[in-house]
Structures are given as structure tokens and as C-alpha cells.
Image (cartoon, rainbow, N blue to C red):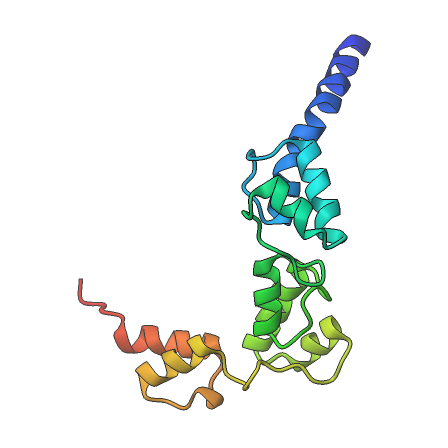
Amino acid sequence: MKSAIALTAAALTLAAPALAEPQLARSLGVEPGAYTNVELIQLRRAIEENDDQLIELITGGDVARTVNGASAGQAQLARSLGVEPGAYSTSDLIALRSALEENDDQRVRDITNTDVVSTQNGVSPGQAQLASTLGVDADAHTTASLALLYLETFNDTDD
């Protein structure tokens, strides 16, 4: 029994770096498996220190730069929600987006610790397009209510 536990522990110890490598690669904006763990660690340090020469040397220019510690995707999501990139975790950003879509002001305040959070002009481009398609005012609807209205309007139930 003790040898089985020891073997399992040894296997996990050896596998840990391999399990962490894809996560580290994604956080740096590179394809998992394209770089060694050493290169990923050097790349992370180069990004943190804004060492463009080392970043170029390691990646050949093939890396998504971070904004305030946030990946390009995280930064884009943060900006679309009207918050500072890098200030919130991905799960917080997703929860914030959900709260904004549901017009849940209390949840927005809980997540942001502020009284006001808005998108750049109050309506996302997707929400504006959907409202335009439906011929309604985007400011009067949440994204969820627009989606429901879309389904009610265009869903063909005649099978």
C-alpha cells in the first residue's frame, strides 16, 4: 500500500510541470507545446520586465502581449465592460458581464466595490446590432431580453 502511494506521489511530482506548462503558455499568449518550460519562464520574465528584445528572441514576435498583467482576451473583455484590464480575474469579469446583462446593480457593486460600472456607451456593439435587427431600442433591453425577443421573433416552431 505504501509503495502504491509512493509511486502515485512520484508520478504526480514528475507530471506536475507537464500539467502546468499549457496553463503557463496560455497565460503568456503562446500556443501550448510550442516552447519548453525554461523558455516559458524566460518569456514570462521578459514580459514582466518589458524586455522586447528577449521576447522577440524567444518567440520570433509570436506572442500576445499582456495589458497590466491581463492576456489580450482578458484585456478586451475588461475594456468591453468598462473596467481596467488586469484589475479583475477572468471569473470576476464573467460574473460582471452576467450581472451587467441582467441589470443586477447590487451584484455589479459587489464585484467592483463601486457604485457605477458601464460599458463604453452603455450598449455593446453586439447588443446594438441585435436591437437594430429587432427594430427596438437597445437602451431599453438587456442582452438577455434581446436574445429572448430574437428567439420569439425568428424561431420557426413549424417542424
